[in-house]
Figure 1 (cartoon, rainbow over the protein chains, first blue to last red):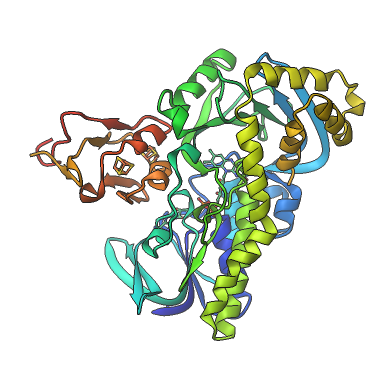
Figure 2 (cartoon, rainbow over the protein chains, first blue to last red; figure 1 turned 120 degrees about the vertical axis):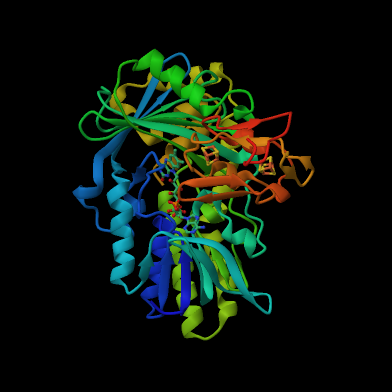
Length: 388
Length: 76
Ligand SMILES: Cc1cc2nc3c(=O)[nH]c(=O)nc-3n(C[C@H](O)[C@H](O)[C@H](O)COP(=O)(O)OP(=O)(O)OC[C@H]3O[C@@H](n4cnc5c(N)ncnc54)[C@H](O)[C@@H]3O)c2cc1C
Ligand code: SF4
Ligand code: SF4
């Protein structure tokens, strides 16, 4: 290991690995630091992703695909199930393996990786970020870098230390719990989304099938809801009503910052990617694909900045992100504020009228017309958003 | 001895051995007053304003409001 690098990436999730890989592909020196002992573990994720979202970065491989998805089922509060077929739309991943494979692509491109390295501060030179302080096996150390890329996920402290406003308003944080349970008899190729005041007010409840009859089951509620009733209470109720005897293989907590991207995601010597930049799709809560996109853009631009010996070049990242996805997320955010405020009654009506269309005619186009006739065109947008 | 927050006694308590280290509370804390390592979490007393937002955001109810004040670790 060297004592200074062109680029240091903090956090080895999907966005960090892509940032490290795209930077290393430019031939500059890159080190990625991860506080956990293992890349990809623990998994705090429903693991659903669109095929297009991952195949831009890695060749789909059965070893990290737990199930193939071609159906979406939206379940309204009265139990009406509106299903939409989407062809070969996406996957439920095995992120424990997937994240590892992504990190390996970064290593293959030439990036160094160090786990158990907890970054706890930044170094500055003339007000510009110039490296990181970190704790490694009980010892305090430091390393210099020309650019630090913060990929430190939902907790996102590195950006704050660089003077960017990164914390998420508690009302916009989806506070989640999820279990992976066994003996769950649902469609193997269907993602289930439940809506309603009793299951997940202001958000949704999900069942995403995995191999061997297991499934990721969870929900997120905003901190505003959490004030009265926690995500855990909602999950416990749902499980005792629906799957009282299912063995539980894992259970995790987690946070999804469901907001638009931060105002600023780069500054002198610093760039933010993935959850740390709040690049999650605010409507679906999906952040794997968008984080990889953010990471890849940031990594490439950082590499170019080093090669051109022009560190100001990193400031062009904000604009590129916004034209690729950031602007779209602003639309999704508005849709989210619309649908998540629907009454239970409205959800029921939409699902019922959609179901009056014969199943083989429930194409996206028909869905669009039906939803329009029923006024809220938003249902279509939900559907579209989940496959982007 | 009570622990001292930025705004008087510290009233926010993370229950020992219950946290899942998920980072949700850290992401919403307006004061950057929560330290979270791989499997260790604590409030940075002098930054905390007792605003309670972390309590509402913890998905598994591990953070509590203690109106008496939180005692220092050595005496607790
Ligand atoms: C319950 C739940 C369900 C979800 N379901 C889905 C889904 O179905 N589909 C989807 O697309 N998205 C989903 N998401 C969102 C998705 O998990 C995230 O958007 C995605 O993991 C973000 O990737 P990232 O690389 O930005 O951050 P992360 O994957 O969180 O990686 C950040 C890394 O940084 C490390 N780190 C943090 N601080 C430091 C530090 N100081 N020093 C060193 N390392 C540090 C962390 O240990 C971590 O490994 C879900 C999230 C949750 C919580
Ligand atoms: S009470 Fe407020 S300031 Fe204190 S740790 Fe919680 S969120 Fe941060
Ligand atoms: S939100 Fe709760 S479970 Fe998550 S890190 Fe904070 S205290 Fe721990």
